[in-house]
Amino acid sequence: MKPVKPLALILVLSFVFFTLLCAGMGGAFLYRHRDTGLRLRESPVVGILELKGPIMDSHKILMKLHEAEEDRSIKALVLRLDSPGGSVGPSQEIYDAVKAFPKPLVVSMGSVAASGAYYIACGAKKVFANPGTLTGSIGVIMQFADLSKLYDWAKVRRYAITTGAMKDAGAEYKEMTPHERAVLQTMIDDVLEQFKQAVREGRHLASKDVDPIADGRIFSGRQAEKLHLVDALGSLEDAVKEAYRLGGIEGPMKWSTSVLWLNKRKHSFIEKIVKEFTDSEDDEKSIWEHIMQSKPHFDGPSLYWVAHHGA
Image (cartoon, rainbow, N blue to C red; front, side, top):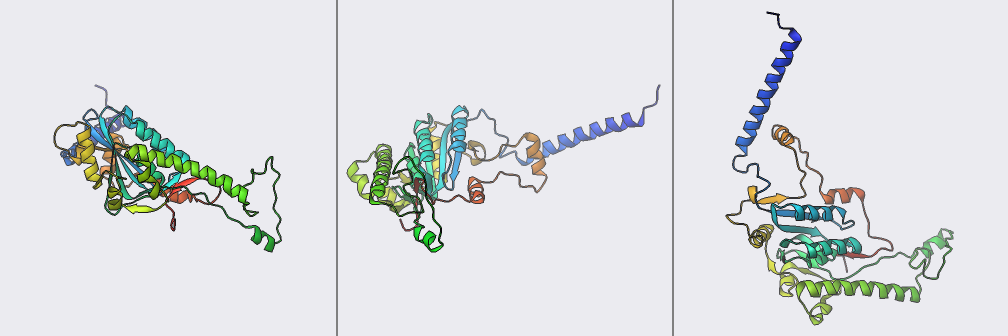
């Protein structure tokens, strides 16, 4: 019988040790999560999708909505809004996707769901707000700055070559003319009418109910309920329970097995085991943190549905 080579023996023992280690860690992980468990993807759940911070882009939310639509285990969706609004175009795209979502979709408002975020909420089957939620702000804002006198003081002369009189309307180097103001006002009035139409259709309200409050003012959740801008006062848990009911899911609802958070990063089984035995916090940053780091601003000739201080 040939003697066993030391290298081969080390490799075999290493393999055995690694196998036993993985089995032990996996068993410990499954035991610690025996109640919250590894939920089978086929079991029916309510999905929770969070939209946080200013709405400057629709891509990520639209992709998550498509994923929720294609996931057969998700029977209903809760869209958690915590946003002051944002750009008109992305808000409209998300609103259209919410309105067309084929499964029951319930909106839950957090601390604020105003302007563009409220526009999005109008596409949902049912809307919950906390009593102290700031919502509403049905209006449009377009901001400009007139720096012409500052340029004069600094002896700086700015000018532009344009193909039309309106091409540099709102430029910061000159005072806005009455004609420019009238043209821009007509345009944002049209966008406001689009907003009011979404409110009328989504909330089943008449023009006489919407027009008087469509001046940019904000409401508490309790005020909004009285004005029929939301369906009910309630927390995220209330919204999830309602989505659970609308989705036709049987049995008692459990947060550990009946809810799927769509914004959280999906870890592989090995990643879950490693994270279980380390102190590493490897969750992805929230949308709000990314937005704050990119430091967007609302100044300039862009169109926004956003709750504005003093509006």
